[in-house]
Image (cartoon, rainbow, N blue to C red):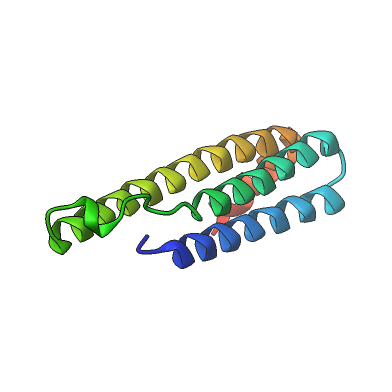
Length: 121
């Protein structure tokens, strides 16, 4: 990810897509564990909020704290590269946990039907 705007777009797009799928299953599949799906959606929404909040951090050093502008820019670039990598990694871990919880909420017979339909294609 190159910048804060791209991080936020990625987080929103992926989270919205996942929540849409979860809501579809919640309302359209009989026998799902609705409480587990609600909790999984809460995790997704929490991950979105946390990622967006962490993306708003600023580099706390000033150019005068460095020998020259080149050193300042290099340090600032490294800071944001590490920050954005951590945000994406933490976000993906939360999404993985939510997806595991969501998948566990789906009845086994529905999972088998889905596997069979994928195998036919």
